[in-house]
Length: 267
Image 1 (cartoon, rainbow, N blue to C red):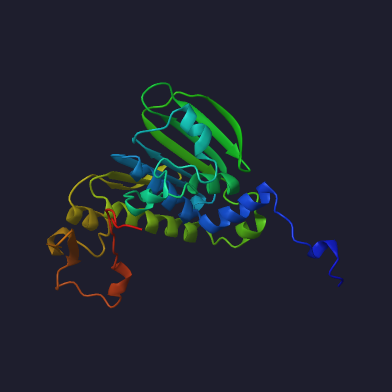
Image 2 (tube, rainbow, N blue to C red; image 1 turned 90 degrees about the vertical axis):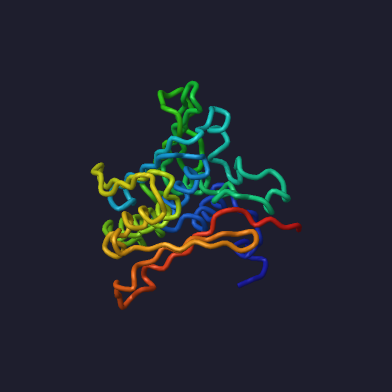
């Protein structure tokens, strides 16, 4: 093939193609959507978060919270690439305390799913609709304080990726696992998981030990769950573990580490 063949020439990708490729780096399965949206809800200061799955998350994923919410100006920007409220300068990277900060979550979801975001800061609410990474509408919408994000038809415009998804049961199981990992790390927040509109799990706010026991009842029963706390210099830790009376051959299945706070240093 000739080096002058136009098919071998270097070119800049169109914006819509670049967005879809970038979306695939952030969102590779439905559970990625659950993870990103739960992170945003936690960062928004929510005291209650609800996750509703349909068809294992392939059909739709809805995450609702009672956090700080967004106004119309925020909604007009939130779906764009690298739009974020969590950092502004390079220096902010050295003191961030949020779970997300890159501003890629909603932009990536909007590029590979049909996206609806309704939100209110306590004044008039608004709803944003996005498809193929482009805004369809932004209109006033009756909404309580907080945000509800719904992603439907995951990978509807990326058939190659959609074909590699597993069954609804398998994808739903992965979404549930991510839900539990996030819920276990934030016991001060109330969580609820629904599938096909039916409540499957309710986790009220409580202590870390109570949360772990509620999230993983097959392993951590309240009477056989213990905790240990300690500190050293500028950090503290809490270890929640099953009593030595509990024996499992696959203990690593339930070994999770969660780090919260900021790493403060100078660049």
